[in-house]
Structures are given as structure tokens and as C-alpha cells.
Length: 148
Ligand code: ZN
Image 1: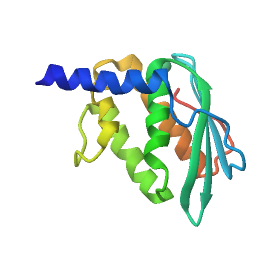
Image 2: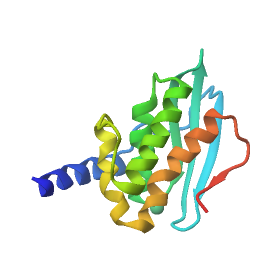
Image 3: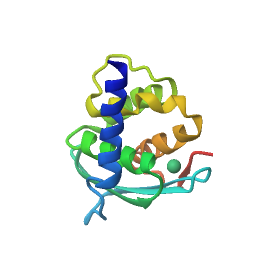
Image 4: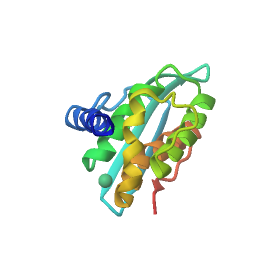
């Protein structure tokens, strides 16, 4: 059972790293932020178009390992149509999931694929990087974020 679950999670991550969703520069973005994970060499730029406090569209660009790319892809897929406040809540849930493997309410859908990352400490920052970048974008932070 657990092996099957892990395989399913791996498939989700592989699928999103091989064909990342929303992987483009967003024309007319109102919010942009850059992030880097020097430990692995991951770079990500998150673009968002926010209107009436709701994310109308979101995309990313960058280069990095499979985990960082899959994380950015699933993130952009998950937060579209959500408010800034909802993304802040989701950030904390994902932070818990990625660092401990536990989620408070089990309502993370495909994002639960990152539940196994905490077993690989060197990958934790790869998975969390896009979440730091999206938070910086929503907060209008001009300085690039670093996981270091
Ligand atoms: Zn990485």
C-alpha cells in the first residue's frame, strides 16, 4: 500500500518535472519575484497577475532540479484563482508537509506528492524554494529570496 502511494507520488513529481505547467513568462504580470537555492543551483522566477486580491494567472521560469521544477509546476497549478491570504495559509501547510511529511488536514491534493521529501534533507530546499518565491511575489518583495 505505502509502496504504491510512493510510486504515485513519484509519478506526479516526474510528470511535472518533465512537462512543467505554466512554464512561461507571464505578459502583464503585476507581481514578480526571483528565488534561488544556492545549495542545489535552482533558480526560479514567479510571475503573477493579481486583481481584486485574487491570482488571475501565474507562471514561472527558471532552471533547476526535478524537485524544484515539479514543485513550481504544481504550485502554479494549485494557487490560480486563490486569494493572497489563501496562498499564505497554503505556504505554511506546504512548509510543514515538506519539512515533516505531515499535513494538518490532508486536503492538499496533488501537492501531497511532496510528503516524502523530508526523508531527503538535501531536497527540502528545492521543494520549498518556489513557495518562498511566490510569497515574495505576493508581498511585493523586490529583493530576490534565497533558501540560504
Ligand atoms: Zn534542487
